[in-house]
Length: 164
Image (cartoon, rainbow, N blue to C red; front, top):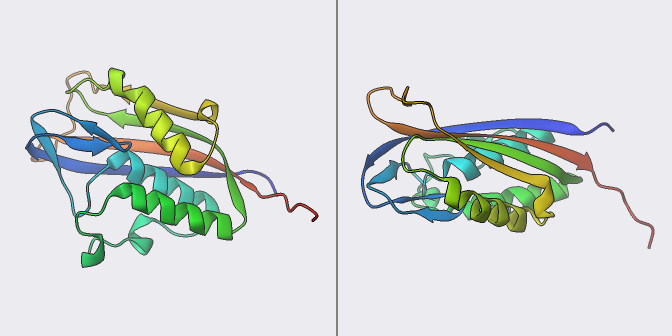
């Protein structure tokens, strides 16, 4: 079977606050994410990409925001549960490439920690994970409020069964 590619995207509104979690890393700033769970857009995009590549639906199918079980949930739990389902479906992660879109605060100093967290959660070599931070050059991510977004692309490979 050829490699399978998945693409995920997530965005959330920013509100006044004392920080938020991104890629499993605490970002200290004057904003918080308005979300049902912890609102970690990077991990949500990653989960969507993983489910998409495996043909298993999307994050809303598995962790709906209408289910109180997921209120304020740590998105690292979503990744762990997703990896169980990906493994059960017979796949392994080949690589991950992710972008986070946000003008402020600057994320450069936190990218390596995000990369390491993702590699650890996926149980892959950090060399196959890329996390990039992109500004929108002052264009902003706006509807009626400032926001934060992320996208992730994933390649999954069919697991090779090993003889005992």
